[in-house]
Amino acid sequence: MKKNAYLRLCAQYVTAISFLLAVPSNSESAVACEAPSAVCEWRERIVGIKTPNMIASGILIKDGQIVTNRHVVEDHQSILIKNFDGSVGKAEVIPHDIPVDLAIVTSGLNQIKPEFPELLAKTQSQTLYVVAFDQGRNSSRVYKHSKFALYPDLEEHPTARIHSNSKALPGNSGGAVVNEHGMLVGVLASGDHRISEIIPATNIDKVLGSMGALHKEAFSEIGGFIRRCADALHASASILKDPPNPIISKIERNCLKSKNKQLLDQAGQAFGRWWMFDISEKFLRISEKLDPRSPNTLMSLAVNYHLSRKPKQAIDILKRYLDLDPSNQQALRLSIQNAGIVRDRAFADKALDLMERHNPSALPLANSYLENAFSD
Image 1: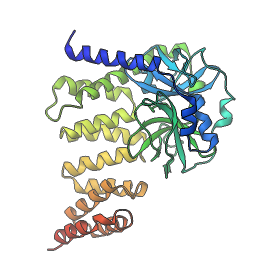
Image 2: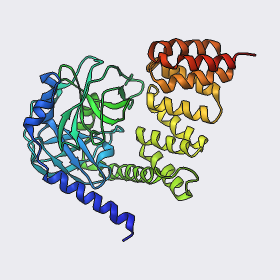
Image 3: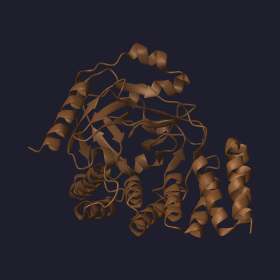
Image 4: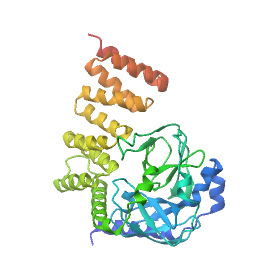
């Protein structure tokens, strides 16, 4: 066995043993939850999920069914789950044919909770909490709430996502996102230090209504594309330039066929990092069609156009971005730079106004740059 493969296997083994043996302290979790009680109660619905490739989260809905992300289960037929009480068991993956990043698994371990449809949010709140499995604590946890949330038009873009600055960490994928009243808004798909992406909860009923063995082959095939795409992106993370052709081919082939928005974004970012701007743009534009109001996608496109010296295209994207997230410092810096390059005074003034409001310490340097840009 090759050394790297052996080390990965050892790491997975250690993670699996930790997942199985660690017992959460429910009293500690109760003390740690400073959210409204209706939000804290969601911790009992959260399960930890262990697959051969990752630790993630899931939400107990009804009759032993758990909803998680499609990209979590990949093409695995069964996974391990850990309940809030620390009990561990196996869950089987149920195939479906809805093109959304959700999957249903079922396990006999879980106790039946109140009927799920009654818990769905009916209003669009800006205060959202992620309730998910925390790898460090090995138990469920409520994270710091958001200050804003962007809701999609699902009739026009049925696979679009909710975007929020609610806090999330690795291992939270598949966790519940609830409002301040404890009503379910969606399922966390991805999160970073700034923007989290959330699958709207209205998709869950669609998935539940489409489950069946007849979808097994197609479901598994797409799961294979998701897994191989994620593996290739993971392998590419340490490649700073000149990626080998097999990696390029593996990413292109599998990530396109995965039809998964965040994998398309990550592929576009990887190609952009290698200064392969045309391929990067292709992936990001496909992602944009799925979700035109995605801040993560738009920022990646803006960076692509900035680095490839297409300032007019960058400004077109940045105008859309700032309408969604006007306080982003990176977006404001890019706006100032590209406005100066093409001498777009109106856009420069807009960016300066936003910078004065959200990042005033950056104003002197921005003004100095624009004075030089417009000097002649």
